[in-house]
View 1: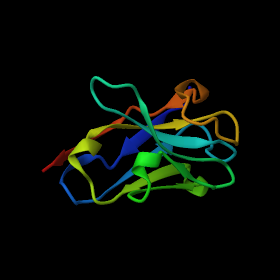
View 2 (view 1 turned 90 degrees about the horizontal axis):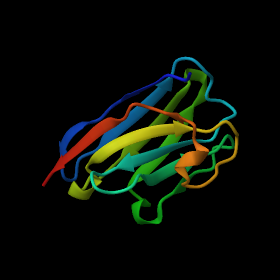
View 3 (view 1 turned 60 degrees about the vertical axis):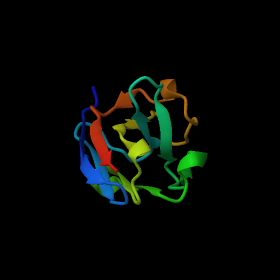
View 4 (view 1 turned 30 degrees about the vertical axis):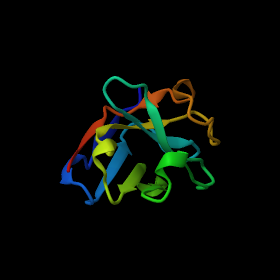
Length: 124
């Protein structure tokens, strides 16, 4: 069982920034594709960003430019920097990890390991 601890969520005003982090405590992140998803009530999980073992990054088309995913395998940590937050970014953000070094796109079933979620609230 992989335990991920997420942090960094909170309540900010529109235009503000947040840095989300996710740290694995039982396995190493190196050699795994890792990703961020978000869940808005009433909607399906939405892929936000992913980063394979090669550190090439990919973002959901609608979110490019404001989100930056990064990883520090020496600390078993995945990060998501969100700038210029908008009210529609309010969601529960989850980190996810795969068993393989390359990413399988936005299919949630590709990622067997999930964090508990950290909430982001944006006020206008």
